[in-house]
Each structure stands twice: as C-alpha cells, then as structure tokens.
Image (cartoon, rainbow over all chains, first blue to last red; front, side):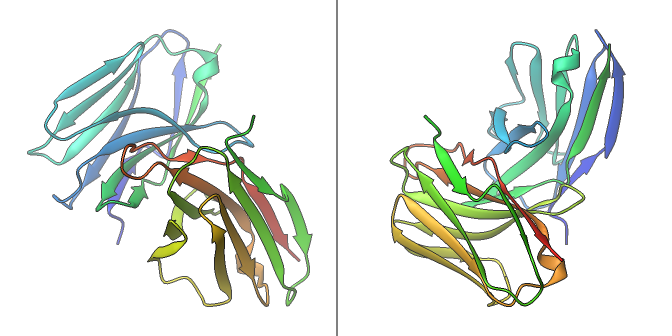
Length: 111
Length: 113
C-alpha cells in the first residue's frame, strides 16, 4: 500500500513558469513532510520541509502548501529554471526514524 | 569532505555471488539507513540503525544483512545475489535527537548479470 501518493510522474515546464507537484497521504500520524531533490547520479538532498501545524512555508523560489484537512501537500517552484531539472520526492515521517517517500516526479525545465 | 560516503560506487556481479557495500558518515549522526532505489526511481527504506542497534527492518529478504561495527559505519552484505537485486543502494544518516534531515550518500549502483 502506497502511503504517500505523488503526482505527476513527470512534468515539463517552460523556463520562468511555475512547477507544481502534488502529494497526498492517509496516515494522520505523519508529523513531518520533507521534499527531496535528486540530480542524476547523486543522492537525494533535502530541499524544504514543513510540519502539519503550518499551512505554507517558503524558501526562495520554493514553497510548500499544506492542507491538513485534505491530507495533501504540494511543492511550487516559481520562476522555474533549467537548473531545477531533477527528480523531486515528497516524503512523510512516521515515528522517529521512518521516512516514507513518494514515487518521485521527474521535472524538466525547457530553456 | 564527503559527509556520507559509500563504496563501491559501481558494482557488476554475477547471479549467486555475495557482495558487500560499505558506508561511513563523518557527521557524528546516531542514525543510519539503507535505502533501495529501483529502475523507476522508487526509494524504499530497507534498514535503520540507531547507535549500532537495528531499529527498522522492512521485510527485506534475509539474504540482505546489515552490519554496524560502530555508529559511523553501516555496511550492507548481500548473499546469493539475484537479478532483481539490481538497483541503486543509498546509505543515509540523520542526527537523531536534534535533526530531521536525512543526508544521503551518492549511491552504489549494483548490476546483477
């Protein structure tokens, strides 16, 4: 059973546009929701994260929107750049140690 | 300095062989992990160790045996390799009490032929 559902699987956006990736979860015990960015040949790296008591968090061009009642959260990349082309994973933490990842979104920004 | 380093980066081996992947972190973290990423990029947790003690074992075949000689090292030994074991294996670490961020190594690309 997939505990964190992520969409779309792939996304193509024009340079300067807004990239939006969505995630949904079922387990209300999740208490921390990070987004990771992975470039080809590299390991995932933390991009931005949010706790469920906050509805929005912004860091530079990256914003997480969190809807606790709908059990959904999304990543918005404003003014998308070719250097943002990567695979993005949403995730959720269960307990102290277990981070569960969505299936990833391959983002390609057209120059 | 690389925070989480794993070796080898690439490994090609035949079915039935036994192989190991080593991981070391120099961040002083208490918790270490092994994740498996398949060809579709799906990241799945395999094991979690805290201060050398096994915390999470996600129904991984017992051909996979992690070993943590100290809290800075978590090695992965795989017996009787199968074609389906081909994947990228990521070692990762987290501070534990003081941090939520998981730091990943660069991955070990295992191909079983």
